[in-house]
Image (tube, rainbow, N blue to C red):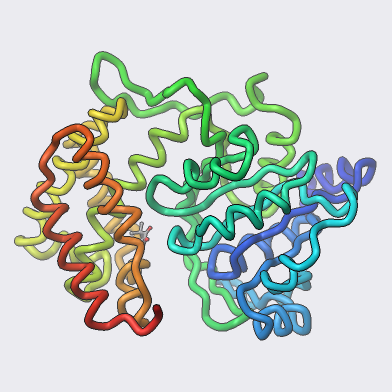
Length: 357
Ligand code: KPL
């Protein structure tokens, strides 16, 4: 155990171990559960099926990375079972719920279930792509308990309890509703955000302890007061890369190599920057084109999540990525012809191949 982790674990001995519940046992849920548990947290994974919960309880999470496979014991509960009983005492309340399901699974029923799961001290961190989920959850959950996160950790689920950590990234976490609208803009031009000072009095002890836990688990993590800006940058990246890779059936790295695609990418970025700006998040087109190309290079071998969804006959997240952008654009009377066309093509593709209802 390295010295930093040792200090954290010592710190918790007085107040007990930090209790984390990962709601969603896909690639990110399994990754966080294994590494945070390894770092000393008490972790419970909430699964969608009993089969997965049984496998996890019997074998733990098998986490594979460059240095081999580790097995990490975690407790798992199936969502249906967990829904039947609510936490019986404050002792059992989680400190943090990590919501790692996809947007399409954030139904009013799940929001009500989460609301019951939130005890006196519990806070919820949402790791979804796209926008609109925090607002939907806030219909059932006190807004000051809702956090959003943007992560570039790379993970792939290889089985019910198997996950590969395919690339280390950066994770930013902050309150979903700050009321400040902080976005790094100055005179209408996007200025790259400096990281907020991590010892800022704005962040409370629970937030700082949670960050320390993530750091101890090896995740480069920052608390941020400007999540709006990070969310929109990620939204733009997903709105460009995901539908194009999904429709063409290519890896992320292939996109910039195709001249027709490069042209579409430029147009898509320009459109999204216009909507972002109308929403008070001025993103600079040139800077964002470079950012998208950089992500394509850094994740060159990735099959985007939308490509994976279509390949497996699942509904995609198009509704919460390009679909959300279209709805925002309509409110501001902005036309998004390229986004609209890609949105329609992915919806049509879903109709032809989706196996799930
Ligand atoms: O987030 C992603 C996704 O696939 O959803 C990117 C950044 C495009 C990486 O594949």
